Amino acid sequence: MDYQRKQLHHQRRKNWLTGGICLFLLVLGVVVYNQIVNRHQRQQVFLRNYPVRGVLIDQTDEYADFNQLQTNGMRYVYIRATQGATLTDDDFNDNYTRSIGSGLKVGVYHQYSFSSSIKEQEQNLKHTLGNNIGDLPIMINVSYYNDYNAENVDQKRLERRLRELVAWTSKYSNRPVLIKTSRTNYRALRHIPNTEFMLPKATTGKKATFASLNQRDQLYNNGKGSDFRMTAFRGSKVQWNRYLQELKQNESRKSELND
Image (tube, rainbow, N blue to C red; front, top):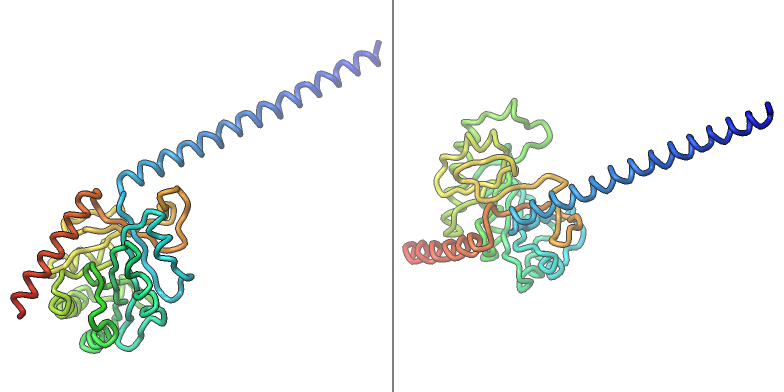
């Protein structure tokens, strides 16, 4: 009898353990499933809200297949041309040439230097770009590096320097200038004429036409993640087409005035 009771007790414990494991796996499966569903739903909402997306490319990135980027749902690309007073991106000419005809709208950008003179940065841009200014506003990327940070950069001096660089760049391209920067810098720079801004996605602003995206939103139309830094136009596909049309019309008017 004692042996039978021990066997019965052992079997019950085994059944409870097996049941507990099964219940745990069931709960875990439900949690994982819900996470997958929620992530998919969030991705679909994001793709609907930001249907016009593009990528930023420089020489540190892997080889860019621009036709494949277009197939994956990208609408535009911004290619780094210059940085500071002397640096030219090693891959700029190759990237720019290969991007033409890909179906993507092409933009070029300059990495702003806090230390180089504005005149030198302007000459670097002019020497590197020539007539290769693409379809979109030239972008100036204002981001901190090395010892430069929000605590030691004088916002008034930054505004004065950017005002000068923007005035030259706008005249050179006959287009507005797109400034990619932080929310804090936007408050200091937003009153500069002939500017648009690319700001972090959650940041709003009257002149914010583009958004830089966080890591989880680096998505192609098929839901796969991007190997490049991705940004987005803040508007619908219809608004994007209207934006491009207005950009071209304004450029033509300015060109006629300058002639």
